[in-house]
Length: 140
Image 1 (cartoon, rainbow, N blue to C red):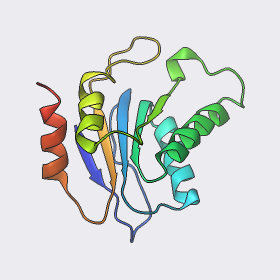
Image 2: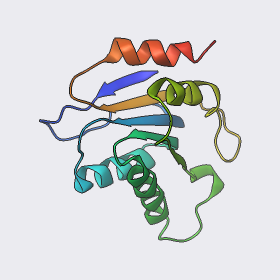
Image 3: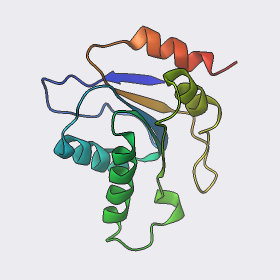
Image 4: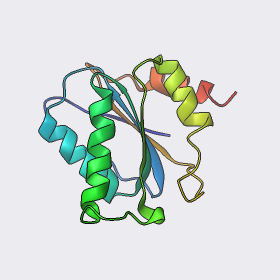
């Protein structure tokens, strides 16, 4: 699991991670529509194949990544090897979402294993130890 705190004072840039991978987007502060769109396009372009959104306006992230995936293929059919599964989790707790990401979001639409996970944390302050512990708890 790769944790990345998204500093609100700098432009958003994704860390490098080998594809395919899954990404959990944690949103605990406001994120502009422009930043959300750029991150969505970057996730799709970098090989994210499963995006889970949790927190403020998480359904907007689900829609944004879906649209970025469609845009990548001219709003036509998305080949199965490039399809990005998206989910939003507005009614679950953070531990539940991280457990789901660890235990159930394990393969792509075309049955490719997703062993790598990127966690993008849009929060007030970095909290890698807490997030890592919650994610690792999903192993049991």
